[in-house]
Image 1: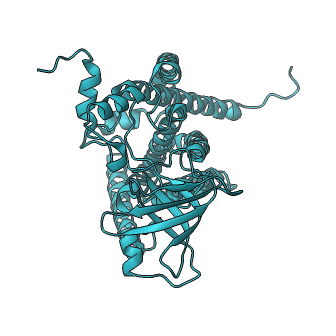
Image 2: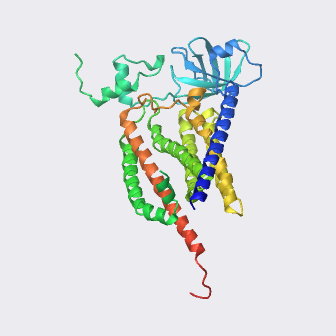
Image 3: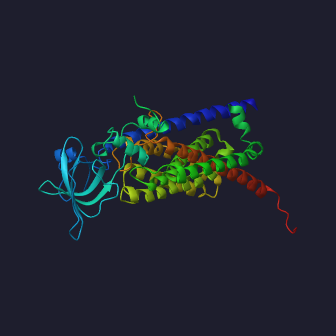
Length: 177
Length: 243
């Protein structure tokens, strides 16, 4: 009885080793594969990447970046709505031209992804424009208060750290010296 | 550790310990979920740029968390089944798979409904969305494989291997938004940083996550107990000719 029990326990330890080694090998292989593929796993290219490594023509490109404040020009008078804006990653900017309706979240300072083709004149002609939103979730009155107090302008970047304004909402009647 | 581990392997002991806990866990989960949902859907503030759409979060995030957690459970069951031949592990894996698959599917569908008004598209092939779809397919494969053989032990072994190999997908899902640029936004909640979310949204979200999780635990426990009882019933000697 005890002997068979000891035998089964040593067997299960052997199986534990086999499973552990297999899992380690598998995760190593996956990590190497993902590392090797990491360039093609990105969803979009930044403007500076696009300018430094121009892709072959006719290839559909996803261009991602922030809409430059003050660069948005809309033309709603024609039959098809038309919009022009600059997209930047902080190092370079590319003008995007799009015929169609942009998502509700599109605004100056918003991160967007434009899907389309770079033209020969340097303008990016988009077939589709998607809005990205950041990981911050903020009630409207907090956003308004932050903008009124001049602590944040949504046209120029992401909102401040949540810890700062969560304290603000927790004690609304805080007196500022 | 091994003592209670092997004692619980006895289905009778498992039934005796688990069945009284199930109504408590389920009831507690229902109450917490109700509070969380009412708070989240009616009383928490709308997001400053997404508006009311942000309330999809109270279904989407708990389902994503549940799908991942269920898969961890599936993999642990697979390891227990392969290494220690724990008889209840296979039964638990059999009953856990469909619950996790439902969570993954709900996460994908609610995410799609969320993506259309915010991003402007139902679906994109970015790293986060694709790895979550892979998790759903892993669940589907597990559900199919564990029932695919005439001898259940064979299917259980194959399913345990699949569950263990599929664990690789979980860190990919979690870190996809940090490793690669994606359309999906980075993680709002993390272990190292303060949450990038208003506390008035975080509390109902946490309540919903706890409520759904307790509900899932109660559901899985009930399914396991039922399966044990079904097996006992099937192993009873047949008495034919009696009403």
